[in-house]
Image (cartoon, rainbow, N blue to C red; front, top):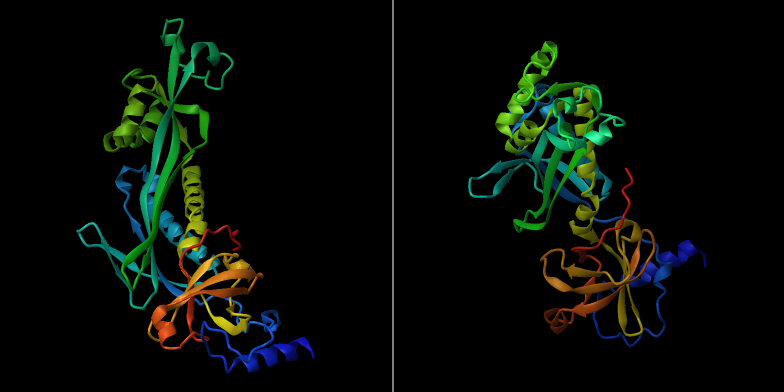
Length: 371
């Protein structure tokens, strides 16, 4: 018999087993080879996910060029998260809004019905300065010798403090079950990236070295430094103790910020993949010996692995039926055994149904992202 005909015979013969109880069926003497069945839809059940992005930063503390482009950087965060959710291969993403209700929580607003909400919050997106100390005995061979203020210090242990530019970002992501209004997972990450700077373009700290900086640099850049000092106390402290403040290229500030945000959003891929519930269909049911087995429409490519446990629920009532345990997987399908059947289901003489929902609530995700 050809493989296609065998698969057809398997599905046809199994159609009478739409409900399989836990107790063995006496007239089945030969184990059914589940491997002969070809799943009709080797993919997870798609879910509707709302994406909301909230900006919690204070753009007024940014230099002018970053302040003007701040909305574009936020749009990039939104698009990067949409792309990430698309690459999970099991969600349809809709744009929603998040509104703070004044009681330490958010209200999510959108026209369409969704299963889950991914709330992305940008807590920080700033330009900052970090100090580096350079000692006198290193300056003659170092990269900061040009314009050094060490000559103004007569101490043999003289040193110079240099303020170097960087950008910092912090993003928090929450995954929320819309029906239960419950957070399934949340995580927060931050990163700092140092910016490239021109060794020959800098401003002397005007409190320490008044009049040392060329007038054209004072006119072009001093206002941004003063704004940073006034609005960011930690940056202000860095600048006050430094001798020289180095400048970065505005275009590179923007590109570095964009690239940094892209990487930060991308780092949440495995967390969302492992915590976003994964739902499968039962393609076929069979009894092998005394064990009920189910052929599922998802496999290793979707994150399943042997010993993963999945909840089974009735599709029309959401009643819990039992639990399956994966015993074998290939790339697009899996075989699972019935590990547990709820007592009330057994009392009614019922078992698994082809229409039941099979859900993996949480997994350890090691999948590689493939855009």
